[in-house]
Image 1: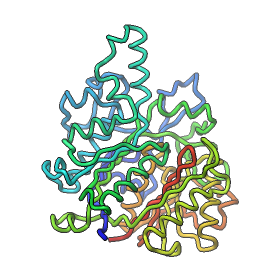
Image 2 (image 1 turned 90 degrees about the vertical axis):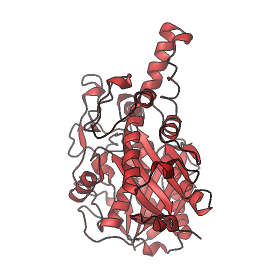
Image 3 (image 1 turned 60 degrees about the horizontal axis):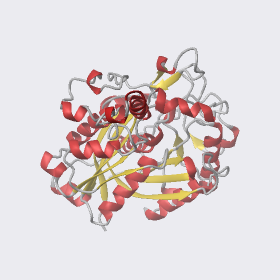
Image 4 (image 1 turned 120 degrees about the horizontal axis):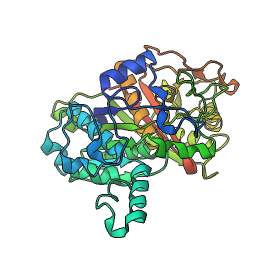
Length: 417
């Protein structure tokens, strides 16, 4: 059976827009959460978000957007992008450069593309508003491809001349975890030699604030403590956007071209709660099953897992469900556990690949990021090994968890190369 390795990473996140800055942020627990005036100071009780620096994509005309000078984006490509498509184009460019892939390798039949995003509510609203105001024949010809859920797949497959497999995944906050898992399957089954996997979210008013109606967002106005997974006084998640890209590759193919390898993706597992449309199972049964399946798939025991990057979004119900899942899965032999959402905020469909990439950095650079902002640990988590500070001991096996609406749960396992 082939092995699957990670050979390229790209980042546009609240804690950094390149690998060097992201790595430093993780090691030093530097968060990317700020006051976010776009929410509306007088009308919204939600005040903070994980913001993307050095980019501006506020309006609906991509030609008004600004981004770092290192990226050159042709006008015909830019015009069909949503905000998170801009982030994803830049993160994909980074990852391809990082992996040392040529344009011919990227566009060959052996390279596929899987993406995950919720689409762009902002662009869709603008599209429908224009249709209602001016008539259906005055709709923007690009209004569909820059707004609907498949927008990342459409745009990136065209922009990077992808000729292998391409598809998008939608399972709420587990979406990009499913994209990674099924990308692993594509390589293991011999269908593709490498997969470019992309997650992205706008991270703007339209994509974050609707969660306020579910009472899921933190109403804290303090960026230093608003996102605090596992804290007993957590009051909801802090939204964020951006894009993260991982390139998965058949290990023999990577070796033959002399590629550097960050880590091996050893296996993955998924399971559903079958419980509620929006609320996690109170005992975390689905996530517990996903973790067990991931370990079995990777052919390791649960006791071999050294570190877990938890889903833990800083919501009262979500964190508690995962705490119980971890306790029933690991018993009194808890691995080190943290949630990097304390630093970034919750990236929704982006979250899984973002945290998987952070986990891969930890495996490669031999550290485990701490779970920041815990002032008083939830009593239910007292028997778990929640690390509050970064530890410079590198995990051999590390797991990254994700859970989404409808009870979708994904666990990914990475191994030191």
